[in-house]
Length: 283
Image 1 (tube, helix red, strand yellow):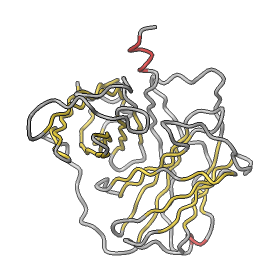
Image 2 (tube, helix red, strand yellow):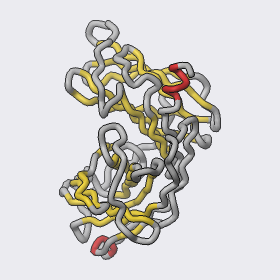
Image 3 (cartoon, rainbow, N blue to C red):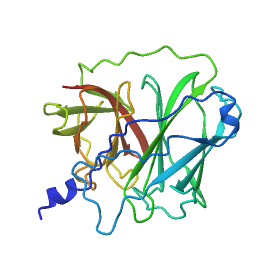
Image 4 (cartoon, one colour):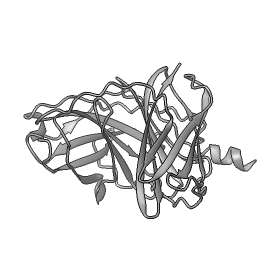
């Protein structure tokens, strides 16, 4: 099998229809359970490793504080159990971590990628500080031992002054400058249900020279998280060539539906992780 095809199998595409709940202050006093049904996973080109199976899990979200306030750190505990309520004990490492937690504001203007610490007996913990009041969506991304990838989502309400809502509009200019680096996104036509190739090209903003020494971030040249506006459709995409160092980082993705999507691409260069946002429209 050709190398390109083998690498394509590593790309994981997940479109999750959300069942998260908005929580009142009272609800935060208890172990909060989101919908217990298995998240719907659309694996796209991803082929499960022989022997894996669909392990049904449920998770409970518990915040240490009875009410969440902006600018105040809080501890989040995520408990993963099987469909019978028994804690899941073992998890697969995916890109150097047992769990990836994505936190975004409702309007998708804010993004954070966290890695909760596993405490054993199905329990993960992490500290979160929300930058402003309003609603936030949380996505827990993990793989139970012997199973396939699962994504569970949840919505929380945070007290405090709300940031100005930012309306998502497709970027007319697909070149962004972050930390002295010029990153240009190019792609073929973006159409729902069809594979599309996203290419990120890196140049030094000051010299104009191509950057060819990107460093691995979580075991790969980069990671891309994509969320559709006004939905829970979520994709976590890995590069076609995980060992690439630039100037190009190439990802293959299949958007599940039409609409406007927010893309966050994360890379590492000279010891610093950079996050580059793009907004695109899928027809």
